[in-house]
Length: 127
Image (cartoon, rainbow, N blue to C red; front, side, top):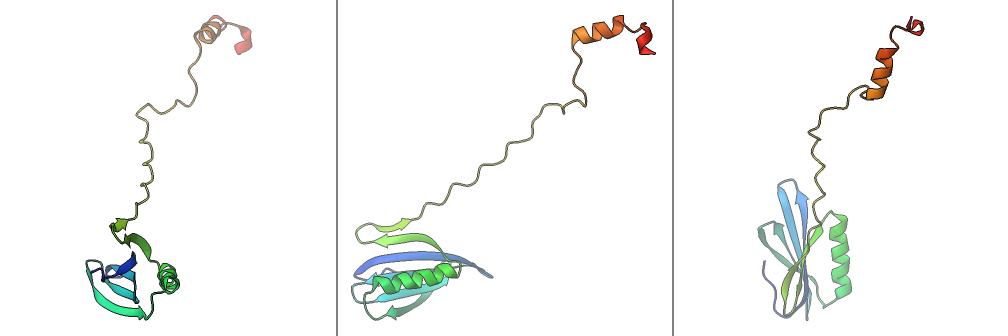
């Protein structure tokens, strides 16, 4: 990938493909709109796609690429070069399972309840 001379703006987009990923780069120069594309790491094809410097035309091409599943990787600005998009923070990992014992099927009995039950076990109400 090369940045053409007199570039006013550039955008780099990427999409998944059956053979990995593919990149598309669009540049707006002071004379034309240029497209570069290829497999990620092998962007070696180039074509003038707009014979006049038109940001509207470049934006239309960007929207076409978005419709085909491309996402912005970065933008190029004069004087500062490529500014890569920040990736969204990965979703938080779920909390690991608790190391505590599983809850008992019935809650433990209160000491007073147990004493009362033991003291009443000879009562005729139990039988």
